[in-house]
Image (tube, rainbow, N blue to C red; front, top):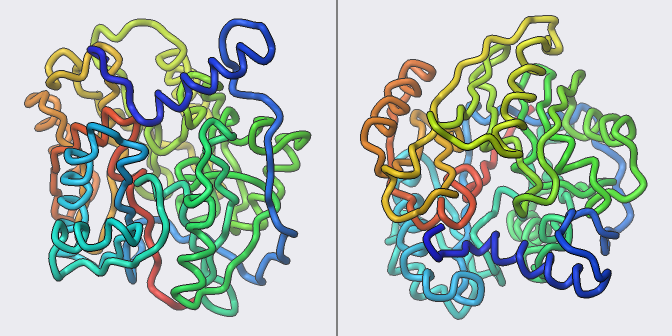
Length: 380
């Protein structure tokens, strides 16, 4: 990446070095034995259901990243996080978690329209560290999936407690999950279908000893889905072990949008994983027996997207749905940016489409969806 190593990439590189030294082997599979601090799983509430993202929100949560993680890129990434928070606040309430020592700066950056909650945090990826909200027969609840730094690739002692702290602060019932996962690894259509990658869930760095069937059963019960569609993904090549939310998203039941590699992209693990997922989804049916319609949005060309280098991944499908709008990235490849925005407008008629420059966030290994977590409107 033209000499730049992202916060997520640096973590993966450090883990590889430590594992190589310990095991005297080259490379890094990302599948070492996982440390776990999970408490006893809670009984799943009756009638649990994870709403799809397009259902009305009560609030969006975000997090203000620390200098400890982002080092010299802290000013740039904080500016982008603040811009995303301000944009979302035009459509729905936003709560930005900030470490107490950064709270004053955060309030100045986001202005009075965004609520700053003082909580110990490290990084901005609240999709993964925060709670996954579900509706139940007894009202709203939040699942704590026990964030462990994407399979112990990096220590995140403060972020590991973010889900529990949000739920406690907001007075929402906490459900301790029987497995480890991240919100970015879960994509639901709201009508009984869940889309996931095997690489990020059936992985000993998160769920040692658990089979795919066991994990699927637990996800069905927790999220209220009837069918799980698995795609292979990629282990050990990025810190998330290839989350689904930068690869494929449900637009509505029966319709999936995929992040299609830019023309001329080298044939590597990720392009092969895209093709495998495309093949699986093209043959799959959802919980209602519908064949899936697949729509591709071509990624930004790294050579036209500023100083990101050949490894930059500009996924437009890592957008975020808010009340009445879609907040999506702009990477600097003007042609691809415009085409992606036009496609998203067609996919979501009636919603305003807002494109924001997230160059630092994107080079750091994530996007707008990764940096946000929705709280659905209270109700059944």
